[in-house]
Length: 105
Picture 1 (cartoon, one colour):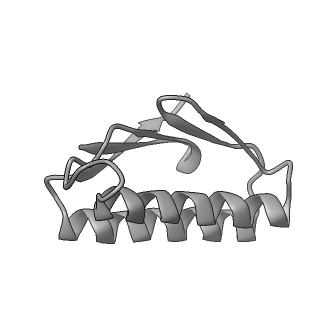
Picture 2 (spheres, helix red, strand yellow; picture 1 turned 60 degrees about the vertical axis):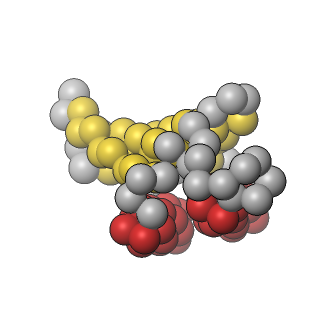
């Protein structure tokens, strides 16, 4: 299962962590992984094209996005990404889950 963990602080998204594999089909043939990957990559590319300093990401076994700048366009792109992932999780609830964690410190 793909797990997407959204970490918020003061109701603003600060980090998004992508972990796991959807296990819908074999590697290379998994439409859920392909969909989630496309959503992620398109969003990251759009944000970096808009402002290369707005986002930091690391890709190892997991993908970690760190939102470094808050503005209307970055927030819109991140919100759109989360909306698309939530739609995907509605269609494939056994293969992708989204969790939000609020940190009020």
